[in-house]
Amino acid sequence: MLTRYIGIDLGTANTVIFARGKGIIIREPSVVAVNTKTDQVCSVGKEAKEIIGRSPGSIIAVHPLKDGVIADFDIATAMLQEMIKKTLRRTLFTKARVLICIPSGVTAVERRAVKEAAEKAGAKPVQLVQAPLAAALGAGLNVMEPAGTMIVDIGGGMCETAVISMGGIVASRSIRVAGDAFDAAIVNFVRKKYNLLIGERTAESVKLGIGSAFPEEHVATMEIRGRNLLNGLPENIKVTSEEVREALSEPLSHVLDAIRETLSHTPPELSADIIEQGITLAGGSALLRGMDKLVNRETGMPVYVAEYPLDAVAEGTGRILEHPDRYEELLSEEIRYY
Ligand code: ADP
Ligand code: MG
Image 1: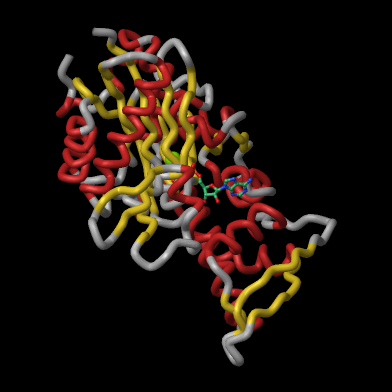
Image 2: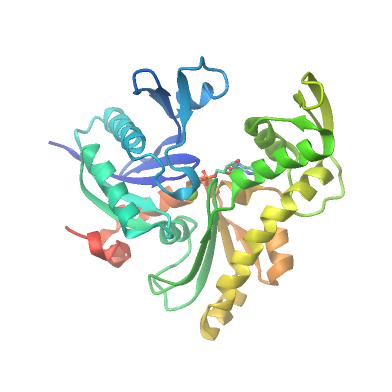
């Protein structure tokens, strides 16, 4: 039997899979469509995301990894199983040896749950690696050096910060504020200011279209459609990029707090390294315009955005799979079994 070595970034928003010898071969939303009458899984990933808000009542879209933890174990298992199968089908392999990335804030019980989910999906052995370590590797940072490097991974459900030295996490924070919270803040803002209810997907498209974290000269506007809460009728309004930035300021302040706290828990020698090496941003929300400038202004550190922020974690698993001997110590100890 041919064994495929794969690395999985099980993100709250997206699942990204790296296959050794191939590179990244799957990027799909972490969404599962479930028929509530039969409890059967209808589809996973892209297909499932398409149906959100458009399906008949009996089919619902589930995010099994709400807020960075496994919210629904059975559905998470089904999703992993489907994604692993897809990977094997695409690469004509029959067995998988899997390295999965988990958020650093998850408990031992949740970690076990992720591992079991992958094993149920037919993978063996299953090893885990902490997401910030993989994100840093994937962003091109040298995590094994005896020098401090800092990675901030801002995804959908979680923002994780970590200062890393010699392959270990020295200081870290993980908060449940990231892209989803940015979307929710836009929904709230529009509701309060315009009495207009918009969906989360609309809010996300506003964020992607005209969202920013740092003041810009050019003010952009975008027309959005929602439901007027006073008369119940559909209505279009225009929002400006300045309004969106105002809406995002609250959740962004939590991200900045997490970064500052992490820095304040970093030993002085390593802080000195970070002043030189700077902070690297990864995760989809690192693509929010002006995020790097905001973090730079608030910390005074140089700030870089990873070249492919959405892929950084999966790329990092790839580095480990390609050089298992070099990175062996990054694998979670309690579950390491080669
Ligand atoms: P996770 O690791 O939680 O799966 P990802 O790293 O895949 O999350 O990032 C997904 C988040 O990134 C979503 O909230 C999405 O809206 C956000 N995102 C993606 N592209 C952009 C962009 N260009 N600007 C702002 N946010 C973005
Ligand atoms: Mg992620």
